[in-house]
Length: 191
Ligand SMILES: [Zn+2]
Image 1 (cartoon, helix red, strand yellow):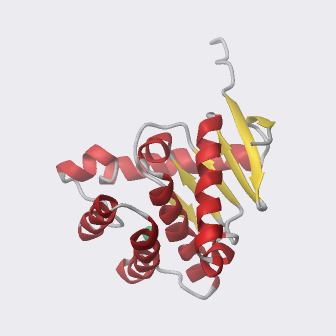
Image 2 (cartoon, helix red, strand yellow; image 1 turned 60 degrees about the vertical axis):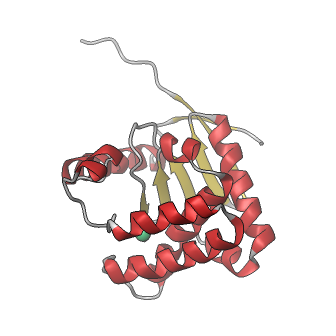
């Protein structure tokens, strides 16, 4: 029998009812600041964001993130958290919460049309709060149609190629299962 790998220590905090979980406390702080920014900028959007039940940071190495609309859970990765500004992270949370709202209102196919709605909401917020360079970056990403896995170099680099997406989705589902069955080593903290 192989020796068991020690379990990773995760931290959890509850922010306005949303569970936030990561192995790194600084990720949780940044998520809190992003939620605060939304709260202080746009109350309508904030209420929409509160539809999220949890934001889980999977300790992986790509930029791929996904929302499980029915479960109301957004899973992201450390790279996206660390490399985003508070404003951009806030706009991403709005984007994913938008999908949760779409799902609750009958959207079942998350294709270009659903993405457009979420992108417009995200863009509007980012235009109000973020830097021009981030807005440009978002527009560029939108043009690549990130919801369509492809084996282009850019998509491969960020983990949005077919293989990367399939792997991340399998990892995320496994992670989600562990989370829901209380199999992760989690310490609840106040931040
Ligand atoms: Zn989307």
